[in-house]
Length: 238
Image (cartoon, rainbow, N blue to C red; front, side, top):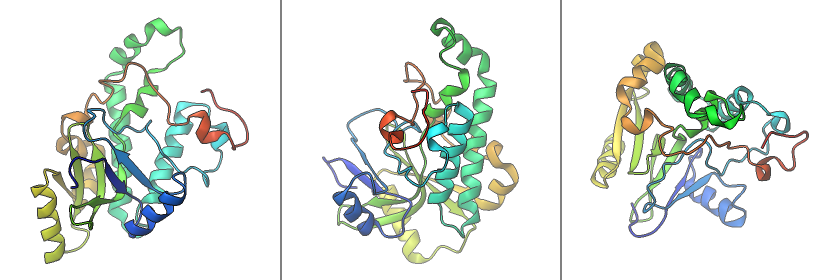
């Protein structure tokens, strides 16, 4: 990865150069994220940017469950239409978020007790790490390595490699090796086991930052900021 400069990751695309070009004209229109690698803050679901222009019902998404569904569907739309395992990963990942919240409901509810009902324990869902589907990881030479999903944990980049979708070519194996040599953690996810085990399988694979994901956030935050929905019909809570 490029050193001593922000990490810029195009995602949801097979053409990173085009995504960068679009974003250069208007950052709101390009699927890219810019990460300050000196910052220990993870990239969370409540962090933008999101291109919600084509998202239906956005202006009336006033409750957590509706907002989670919109995010879930938005991330599905960024996956390869024909890669069933990518869509399965999104379903399993949101299943893991939900299962974690239910397991920790008592603790999370107690943490919000002093706020007069302003927050609900499920609002912490938006503190979960944000997946970047079809991420394009930049290399020092200006090229990109395509990966099924990428996450920024605050301590480093985690790349999800879905195995069993198709036989890896030598070129892809070399690219994965290059990512590892650049300090990127590669997590191999078996597509068949993902289909069978879902969230329970992911729980065994994903490292510590994916568990107790609300740590570091003082209060729940929403990805649906006023600037995101200012052109949508209806209103939102905040």
